[in-house]
Image 1: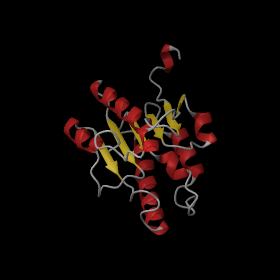
Image 2: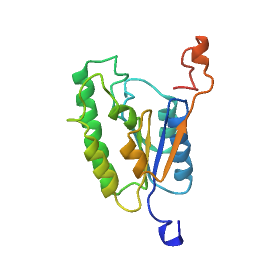
Image 3: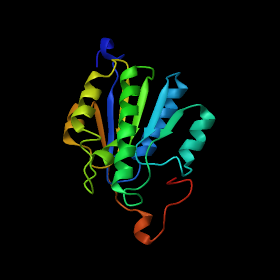
Image 4: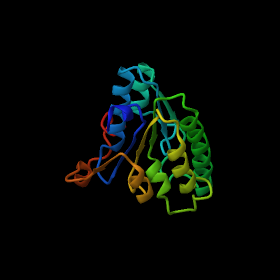
Length: 182
């Protein structure tokens, strides 16, 4: 990147089956905030009905985080998820295109786009996501996290990091750990 391009917003994608995608985005949000950047994190799957450690600390740090989901896809009806995804995408598109933020994190958007238990393309169209990425204001850094990133998104990205699991305590029967997963 030459000096003229260092003001251009980047598209960063954290994907893969391993742990750490959201965690990487959280670290980037903290770093950007430390440098005076306005940051917004939108969570597509996590519900505001549950308490997450990242939300607690972001509130303390003044980093805006909005949880627009209704939880895991098996916890609610397809229609509840479809409605939440549609509202989340409308909100996200408005915030990305509005240019108010320097960094917008679309947490677990990849997961949402990969749902195959029920139709989602009519409420969260990949073509609209790609158009929004392309047409965002020049200064906006966009971070997209979640498993199963679409090839169209990874092709557009300036950085793609794939988290690969080597070993996980889940395999030993240890459930989600407070302060580590949530």
